[in-house]
Amino acid sequence: MADITYEIVEHDGGWAYKLGETLSETYRSRQEALMGARSAASRQKIGDGGALVRDRPPHSSRLFGNR
Image (cartoon, rainbow, N blue to C red; front, side, top):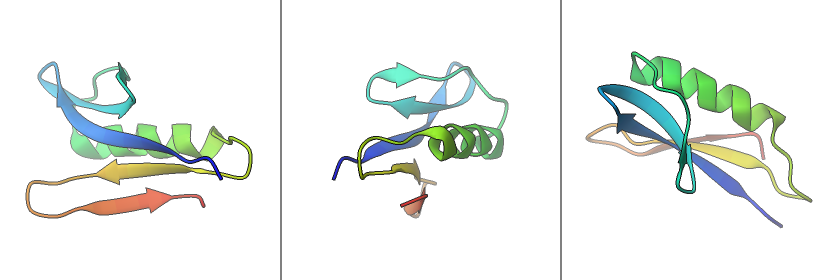
């Protein structure tokens, strides 16, 4: 099963989602970047796997996905 993971990261004075070394456009807030990543993940499908969105606020770790 193949899985891919989008990560929410700080980028260029705002927030972005990242897949591998590729960054999305810059969003004004973490929440907007998270919504963009969820949208991208909902359209992603590779074989039997799905896509996950990893949001790592400073003091926690959460995973969101469509597996």
